[in-house]
Length: 394
Image 1 (cartoon, rainbow, N blue to C red):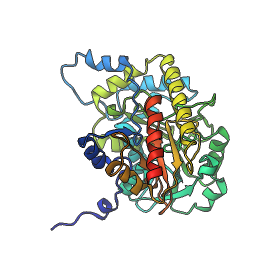
Image 2 (image 1 turned 30 degrees about the vertical axis):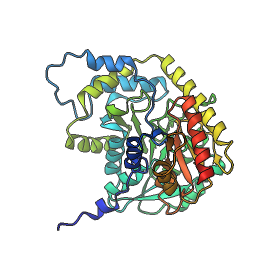
Image 3 (image 1 turned 90 degrees about the horizontal axis):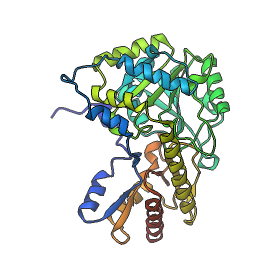
């Protein structure tokens, strides 16, 4: 029998999706499952985006340009300008989601065996993208006791080797919700320039920032033009996860020319989704004000309720819509499966994402879970009530 590739064998399962079969079985058995495991917002997609597709009169659904339509990229550039990010349309490549943007970025700046330093816990699929690209993730552990702030820059520097090509951060962070400060971004900038490394920032949650704070992009830093690569997406911003439209943004012409070759190899991003995304850019600012206020309230409810459970530790996130909670259990992979297979309270249970999948350090995060506060407030209260009862029984 032909053998599977080593790369395929090493490819990690999604910690977010691997429990889906257990959830489906629970639902078939009549159990109501509250999904705290995945960042799928329940906020409505802007009507303007949906109508742009519904009311379109396209007769032939043709390829678009490999870098995405010029009209759309020009509008994205205008959107960024409002956020003090000054780029031209030719410094943007539209991708099939932020995921493809990350794959194209890694493909453009790393070779097999190269290393990328990432503060952990980090978005689980970075492990998968690294495996697919044949590169090594070098983690710098951040601590729940420090609310997952940027680890000391000396810890990053100690890990730099001749094989280090980049530092990758997610800002605001998934799974932690941590928002890097301007000072922390400047520290990373200094390090990237000193060692001539790329600084890659996954900024897909830029619109979700709370408590009067502001998001500071790597693209706002002068002097970093040849080193900065930003990854973005419409998935979370407009509650359009199914559109699968993202982008790479960089002023480094060589990086963009290389990424374009990867884009040409997959032909083009989806046409209808670009039409929807282009229309979404006309969404009024009030949409974000209302959505941000709703997420802030959900965060407050979730953190308040979690802190009532004995033995649970949680940090209050400043952005995105996730938090990491430490539970009084030895292994949350086992606990999360038990919640779906063996436990219910009045015919209801919860689905959480075990946090070990958001680390690359073996054994790290075994007593942590990521919780996405993408449910209405009353559902979050009920979910935490179920979690409390489950922990008591467990």
